[in-house]
Amino acid sequence: MAAHLGRRLRRGATSGAVVAAAVAALAASQAPGATPPADSASGDLPIGAGDTTTPPDGSASGDTPYYTDLPPLNTPNKPGAPTNLPLITGPAQAGIPATVLAAYQRAEQSIRSTDPSCNLPWQLLAGIGKVESGQARGGAVDANGTTTSPILGPVLNGVGFANISDTDKGAYDGDAVHDRAIGPMQFIPSTWATWGQDANGDGKKDPNNIYDAAQAAGLYLCANDRNLAVKADLDRAILSYNRSTEYLNTVLSWFEYYKRGTHQVPDGTGVLPGDRSDNRGVTPGRTTPSPTAPVTPKPTTPAKPKPTPTTPPTTDPAAKVVRISSAASGTLSATAGSTFANRAAVQAVDLAGKPVAGVQVRFRIEGETDARFAVGAREVTAVTASTGKAAAPTLRAGERTGGFKVTATVVGRSLNAVSFTANVTERTADTLTRLDAKDLAATTGGEFTDPVRIKAVDGGSIASGVAVMATFVTSASDPEPATDGPFFKAADGSVVRTLTVRTNAEGLLELPTIFAGDKAGTFTLRLTAPGGGTVTVELKVTAPEPEPTPTPSPSGSTTPTPAPSASAPEATPSS
Image (cartoon, rainbow, N blue to C red):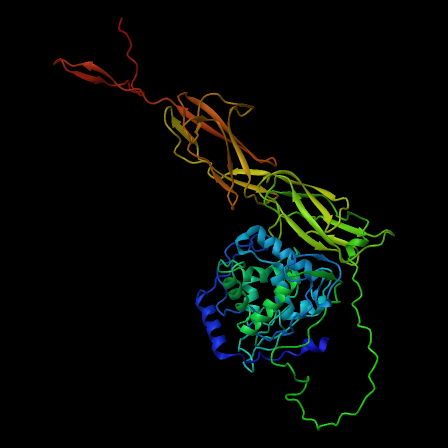
């Protein structure tokens, strides 16, 4: 079977008029350039955000060869039957390796949660995965979903294929001269550079990982605001993967086949296709069939009919599980806006206490929180490894503080769930420093013209997003809030003597305008941050200079009486 996968022959010719029309329609639907979406701090792309244009080549795979095998006539279910049936047995071709199936379903779930208008069905990813790599070579992947060996397309050197010069310095395809399609979803490196994902939360965007590749393929298919429930958009999406009407029809055939029902098979046992584009009907290693001499048929004795072989029933691994238990190391805790150091994890065991591999475990975030898994969803599915363990993707905290739960359940079973308590704490700063030590002074009824700027640091690093509380207090030694003196103004113009200001990305903040109030004296402003950072600022308020008093002049008019000079000696009464 591996030999079949090694034969990467060029795409066969199709009807020139039909293909030209399809390619013209595809090209007309695409923007002239592509802007790679920006990564988030977690290293994962916010799903559906900024994914509006496909790469300029208009093809995810570089139009490399694909498997042309069509689905069998005996479909998993009768026409008109409900889709997504939880079949345990069925036609061998309907079986999808457990980890590969989990990756497709996770990608659909993640993208539907953030881009529901795309209406991405996982069966479309399965159809593309079937013709591109035979479902990752029949599910030849490890516990993390990475192929046991790289899946590479032919060298795109212009000989029978497109001519695409190297774009990744051989990092993915091992070729520093020309590009090659890579991984179970067959991305060319330049397309992967734009659409690559870290869907399994391991910190890498790996085109040879089925979770990463399926997520990227889903986003690519949803580009240009496509609605895959609309036939025209569905066709454009598939053609954007490989610009061939034969490819389109082959993918659609598998798409419809999988929609009628499928079942999970163990990794490594999927049925491998054997026929590639442009090599049908030709013996491997030969360019044309050899002629044979006519043979006179000899009479033969009718042979007894042999029993029709049947596919042995496949046991769902989940059926063996009697319980799942926590396999997490440490608590789930993080500060707002950061990544949780630990992950929720469980182990599935059978009645004898032995680990069960290939079990789908659903992890769900429950409670009022804006924390999300690295794939951008509140709910994800992972598959247990040979140790029986499955871990959720990395959690990333939002800005909302407080506790929530992560629950783990076995898909398709009613076993007791495992619950993990998670907590998000405030961002902290252990040091606050005033940037400008200038004395702050104002007169009653006025305002302070010099701003108050503060820098926040935590553990020697910039403390961004920290909520710093600024309060006018009675004195430096008395933290009781002041009831008079300087103040801030709320949006409605009311007097406010306590407010919270958050530091920016550089750990800096600037207080709004401070008004002096109508009382002269020295006042204290105290700023405090979660984590212990504190700084006090002194403000002086003075009364304005008195206006001079007018005195009558000899002519009857009044003139101002000058105020006594501070340097003039006082008059001494005479004796």
